[in-house]
Length: 458
Image (cartoon, rainbow, N blue to C red):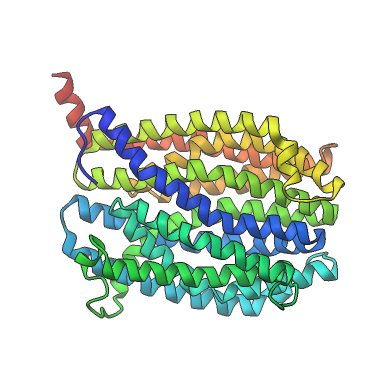
């Protein structure tokens, strides 16, 4: 990364950071996308099983992985402040913390998984698929968390194209493994949704090993000597990582878990509704990769500028990110509205599931606008290391307002399962508005920015 002097240079640098991030996010998401889509072609029961399994796994994995995103602003601030020598120690401690978190979640999951699934009103086939899908994924949790740390380090240096290449190289492998394990090729039995979990776990190991090799052998990463010194576990550094990362992870967990909670509530409406809901949610999540990537780019760029004390430049990046996110969201929402029927057919050959999915996708159109504002602002606030208030706002928006409102609409109106989606949209909208005020407050509070503003006026 480099310092920029005008709006044109900032827009160019934002694009250079953003595009590889977007491609990387799309590639990472494609693993889940292939799981859902290919399992849906196998059978509706297996699709429902993967849907239930994902509803339990995604909030846990994204929430805990979100804690490790603290490495991005930590490293970005160190680079901006020209403290390169402190970077390896921070990253290695992040790896230790990630591995420890992975082990803990495996142990807890082993204990509570079956009781949770047994408490749900699921058909036997659906429960069987969900259980074994999650057990298969468990073998890839440790490398996945380590990869998130390594990726945060690479991205914080502005080398987002590297993580893009790593992830893209694993996509064809994941697709082929899905095809083999789901449909039973090369003499192996057809495992359906369970095979999708196995394929994803293997892929997580591959991308982690590739990332380690790149960091150890390629510049500029090898110049940091990340693996040259065996650092001891340093709990004080863990405290710094968790102090910054926990609010980030909890905010992500709150947002993703509410979608998972809705999926679990959908079980009362039957297998086809679960399958259609999950298909629509999966595709809307695919579109969410755009504002999410903008969010990640803003964390990197604003962290770099804030670390160097250039707060006016950080504010400019915030503006560019939000405007870009809203513009792209309007285009994507329009295309989704027009082609929602064709999108639904990608997920299932069952006529009823296709029809239900198409109706759910109508609500997904409105997701895009709120996400386009909320996600970039969250990324900007993380760049400023302002994360605690964001967590509280997310908690209120989704769990105090969004979910209860959706429950009321579902139970006391004729909207049925669509009521939950309207509640989610309401939660997203409230979050977007409150975060907008928070970002403005943080920027105005920053004395460095006020000082630069006065200089510009004089």
